[in-house]
Image 1 (cartoon, rainbow, N blue to C red):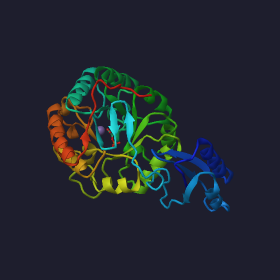
Image 2 (tube, rainbow, N blue to C red):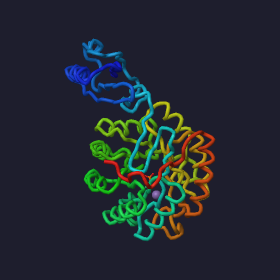
Image 3 (cartoon, rainbow, N blue to C red):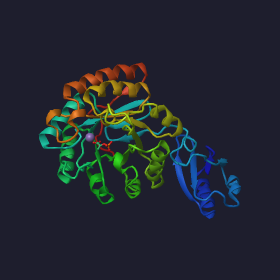
Image 4 (cartoon, rainbow, N blue to C red):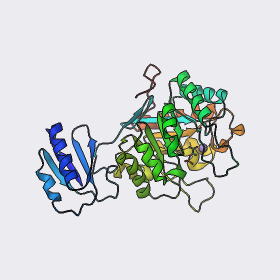
Length: 349
Ligand code: PEP
Ligand code: MN
């Protein structure tokens, strides 16, 4: 159930509506829009007296949301959400570019990459410290040491740090070092982890599970929003199909489709989505042409020596070329790619 408050609603009016919702045994989540406040009442809608919510003070409209996800739906919040985290802005016509290695390997690697991607126009640095690997024998990441190296790279460049968290108990530690917590594809269904990042103040990049439907993905986002964290970015990173030419199949129709269903910004990952370095630039341009709000791309100083995902990583030079192509597409779409200068504060909150 959605309660749309009038533009004239006072904090006391909103509080009264929240109380009315709670009196019906439902939970009231406040969604602050730029013009008006909306209250998403979640819970059993078949209760008697639900229409009485309409008579609350300064209530404009009450309607029920058909989509299974409530807070993530455009019906609840018609205007698009912009996520800001330090140097990274995703949404509102700004295309954020998150770039860096699959895994943080050593100080030299992460600092050199941070400098190179910043030079080429990236607005955030990625790098895995906690790696969820298919095989237990593969490199599992430098863990806390990796987080410290990412913080060092931020201190050098001012770039916001995007890194994965794989366990609810690690959330406070990762949040101490990173502006954005990544929920990896394998963990999209890890509901206790989604709840933990929902309670956290850091922005979240939620990757789509390789076998997840769009509804399942948006319901995963709903867990985070319902937990109280409004700064969620969705990330299409490819799904598993019968096709074996690429590592995954990257469905770009997801971008305009999801943008119609939800107010959350959509980031595309052409690295995992294709699994081949040579396909990444074309799919980055295509993602921007499809209206993506951001890109996340793997870049490594020496991809052939990378401890993970080297076969889909770009060299510094390839990334610079890719950014040139993306700039031209972004200009044609009347959008800004990047847009951040080192004079801006690197960290927010
Ligand atoms: C990654 O970003 O390196 C990663 C493991 O991605 P995904 O969760 O999409 O597989
Ligand atoms: Mn990777």
